[in-house]
Amino acid sequence: MANKKQAGTERPYTIREFVRKIEQIAKEQGVEYLDQIDYLCADPSDGEGVITNPYADLTMHVAYGGCEGIYADIMLRTEGKERDLMTAKTLGETQDDFVAISAMAARLCCIGKQYIHDHDDEFRWEGHEVTFLKDGRPYGGYALIPEEDIDEVAMRGVKEGCRVAIRDNVTRREWDYQPKSK
Image 1 (cartoon, rainbow, N blue to C red):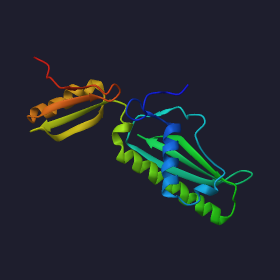
Image 2: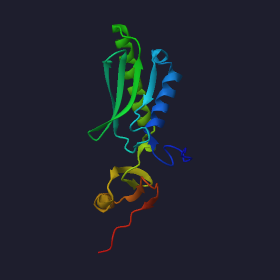
Image 3: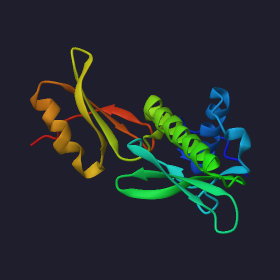
Image 4: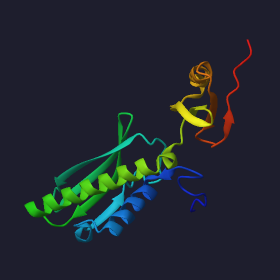
């Protein structure tokens, strides 16, 4: 059953949705060799897993297959943990095919990384944002703060004379911080 909520604004992206987004952008940009691959698919074991942290990097590994073709595996790395994102396969086996699928995979990594960078908030689905505001303008703050650290971090802004805004990244609820009475 399809999830009716909008990915990125009402819920996190699934691996599968993010792979489709990268593929769509790659097609729009005319990424070379994309039209010559046998398939491009999200990791089948984690396609419904979600991406909740914008501090992500995309890495790749390209290798000849055991019996045919060349595979380009693209991984998503956040906070030192790496998980499979997608695999592209070509039936070609020449050195030119190896170089071409490597270049294509590198472009897919760049597209994915740039999309996360440009849509940072769509990938913030854990912890809290603590934003310091002075004269109505952002003055500083912290991202992905665990709930138990909010008071300590928020008090840094209060001591600077800032209004402190908090956002729960999971619920998207926002409020102004009120220091606890002593």
